Image (tube, rainbow, N blue to C red; front, side, top):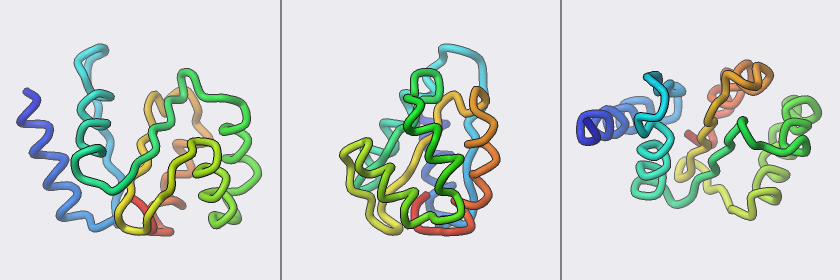
Length: 117
């Protein structure tokens, strides 16, 4: 199972070149978050994992205040997570995104920006 989904993630990274987002869907507690983070660690220079189950209100506010200014959005995100993002070499993972529809709606804009997977 792990190898199969990991291979799919590799194909997505190679083929999408930042032009699409990827949704990992499946049963609860089968390792989706784990495999996404492992893939990020192994295939990107840096990554940010935003878990909407336990995310702070400060992070949620970014999705209301800064989606019209993605330079500031990414700057604040990097500061909150103390992680530098590198254009075309970093990925941002939304975990439990169904819990925060505003972030789910922002995916289209973040993908169109194209800086990060």
